[in-house]
Length: 519
Picture 1 (cartoon, rainbow, N blue to C red):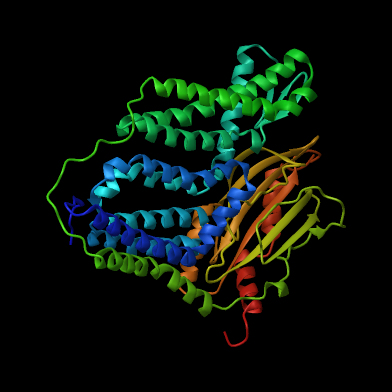
Picture 2: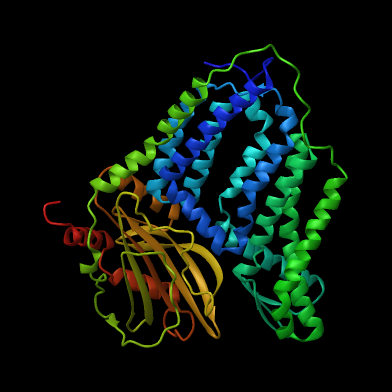
């Protein structure tokens, strides 16, 4: 069932009345979706409120409304004609939402929600009006606070750029991952210096500028590509300038104290540069008013029916998620102990240790240190019970170190043997003053050990949807890289894992012990 959006040859009051009904229908849909997907909306709001990298998101919706207002002449005399064919997309999106909800990727859930909104708008307004407003509607995707996963990559890119530029100027330089040393002192390309805030703000500005100044999509795409590339390069130049200024002035403290101020001033200059470049190719963004079309009638019931069906189809995923929530048991992991370790490993007496992983909401966690003739291993184990909508095993805020004391220098992977099978685990080298540590981390999910966060999420989702009682674990083991005369740190960690209780047996025993009677 499809009718294009056509011009009306009726009284203007009839036209306004048709838009009022559509506005009411979409307003009711927004309220219902807000209730169904409150987790996604509240989660986004909290990030906007607490992260300076995403504070601009408060402006996205007003900007989108302004962009729609700018296109009002292109919409005059057009009436929405609902297209029910696009409703077929909503059950598919609802199933995708359920999958990522069970996997526990909030950003993906938010992207799916915005896509559902796009389909509802396309269904209720019709293809022609939707395409006229495509730019403002796509701009709504910036409501999703995403990009944190880029921070380690941006840190590494920036560090390599700074080292390359310093070498070109023959400044004596030593680099250890994101730590850069020059004769005047040490510099760390911290998360705040990775340039993510500059990059995200630049993309948000570029999207608005492109929609205002360009009509052709290739120009818009080219400007957005420029807005992505320039901030990354500019952030590298900024960080290099800070280090080089410290080299020239021999005053590291003063440069470090003011580097954020320098950064925002530099970013403002970059935005002005983008505006200067973009204005040279401006063509005016608002599309011309479409040609007249034959008259058609408007039925009040059509957008109301389309909206009702769309919201019903979008709710399939949340309804089933609520069923999972009510139908699953919740284990009591407080009764579970840490995995045992065989002799000659012995628990070391408690002592102060500044290494402190920052892990999101484990159901229970263990932190201990064990020693043998090979060396000392610090261990961290977090246990999670996955049920219904609760799945915190892999979260983007998780950090293997507290960045205030320890600094991550390198990231990588290596092959280890766990429970008698070869496994690729994650590696990291961290540093605090003169102390360096090697860390291995991995997940245990549904009887499988893996270093891949993606695989861990998929296995956990499969277990939840299959109805299996899911207990999973995140494990970190670390040892110092210095003062080890007889063993390499890789060997120390491997010997420790060989002596640790088989993790598949441990998880099975934890499940049995924590399972409520009669489950």
